[in-house]
Image 1 (cartoon, protein in one colour):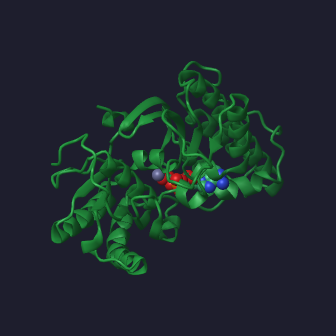
Image 2: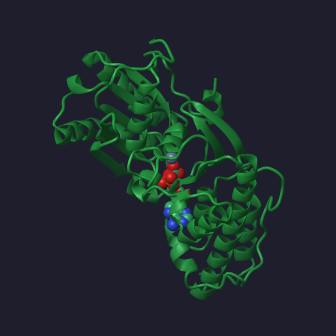
Length: 354
Ligand code: KG4
Ligand code: ZN
């Protein structure tokens, strides 16, 4: 293991691999953040019939796709493994099968090419993406606030430096994307439900149904969505048997989305109070694609005179550019991992802080 904290000599391109959930991704990034090649393969079609991600199917699909994907990306970048400065894989948190496939590949390639290996935290990769040069008009300085809103995570983090993360709040039960997906399923929408629910909500009246807003105005910035989901379950159960009328489903979708929007806006107010010197608010994760939520968070950030940075969707959702960029940040700080670095299905971000 290289000594930590020593500046790394100007490096070269890094290969990043992401396989923690249902996207197989590989990307090659120059040290200055230029994307030399990026590939993402979504497994949504493989899992749609089951209404959610099936871990064993995900792991096999990563295994089937990864090698050709990496070679394809290297080809586009005009590079071989020998030209890389390091090889990085997402080591957690996530589904163990996929993590083993991605990090196993990264370690194998690192051994064969005699390159350093980096075991990266998926949440850290989301957190550092905002610093990718060119993404925001000005690269956000530390500390900044990250609101991670995905299918697997709802967290609010003060990003205080590379490897220094303060968890301000997280979900006590369901992740926000999970709440979207479950509610969408109840409304008869296909998986993944978030985008479909947003589209249906446009036809509905957000004031049609009264839904709870768990933890609203409560101290801190934890989230809770299971009570909201249960309310949707009860609403749908109280409807006459048979398929839900489209207008009614649209009203429920709009009311659900309004409740989530209120919750997230309120939680951001509290997060800003916990990190008043934040230079910016960053949103990431699939739910950050939701325009109503995005608009509300932008409004709250503007009131606090903070810029809101929402990376483009392909960099907001799971991808490998973020893994390769986090690896470049770690390399600059002189940090690499041992080949014995384990995969960690559970790996809270604040565990990285020394
Ligand atoms: O970040 P992501 O692509 O994958 C992980 O969970 O890691 O997030 C996917 C989640 C799903 O729950 C999906 O329903 C939700 O993001 N999502 C949305 C929208 N687009 C994706 N939720 C609400 N509105 C959207 N437009
Ligand atoms: Zn993610």
